Image (cartoon, rainbow, N blue to C red; front, top):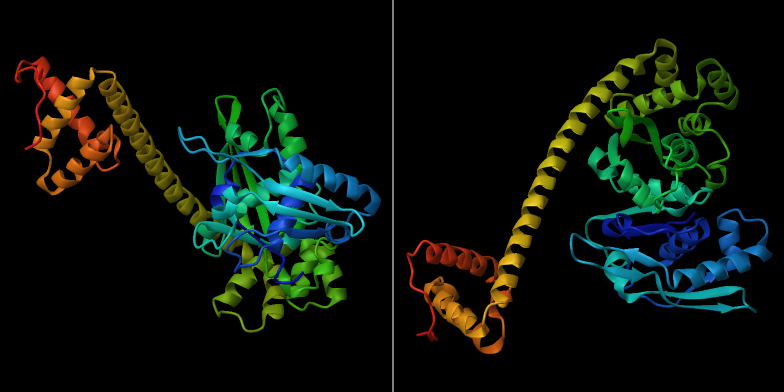
Length: 422
């Protein structure tokens, strides 16, 4: 795979809700990998069906023509839910799609609403090489891989974790109510196969899964993830054909007979753990002869204590992340509550007689911060409801609540005649 086969997505798009089939997922991701870093607008992207078939290992090229045409057609109407809070935001994947039969080409343009999620991204985005998902046979595996990959930065080059509520994970997968109601079925038909594909083919390794219960039922799932060694140094044709242990040992330059012996003697898991340990030491500049140190580490089990240390660090990091997530959630709820309160106060205000609204706006103008007086006057002259301006919404709502409270306590006379700003 060349450096051009890079998939770059905004994290907001990764976190969006949508349901796609395997070929629909592949089609979208393949097209995203065609986008160039300097593209400032979408163009008509040409997808050669033969190249698509080779990339994803599809032997029956004739059938893929029909499958891709169906996928492109359905993606014209399938919605992406990018809603946040009470603000709805639904977009489609493509604005147009055209099939050129004689050339075996599909010409597709992404919907313009996706520009900020796919073009010239500066922050909060995830990127990966197309080769890491091209052998996936499940749309769930692709979805889980992207959701985990978007959290990799939290590991700062090391291990990381991501925790989902069961309902959220099913929502990300597009699993509707009534599907996989029995957790055993969801685990064995969705999670386990997806994890197996990610571990076998991608650049990350899900080292453990924790099923967290509320009472007797699982309500949260935590995935512990480690980045694999740099498999890009190996020929891409070998990725996914050999075991992870063989790939890792080849990366360190271990001879083939030794590889076969070590795999037999130590097993895949021990070899991978030892390789991760030696790689970490190598990056830290503590190892000069990596193959020799790897052999000794496998024999003496040096990596065992290191793994325990990493586990403790991960627990500490997980605790800090959980605290931050809890704080962020609390702040989000407070903001939502504040927004709902302001909306309710202003809705009630707009239900009052127009003369009363005008009078209260005038009273507010007399009590406003002097710095904002001119801005308020301009809003009063140009807008029917100046209090809806983002600069005044919160302050005006607080003013109304305070004014009404004073009125109820008899501290202020009723305002029943129009007053004008000075």
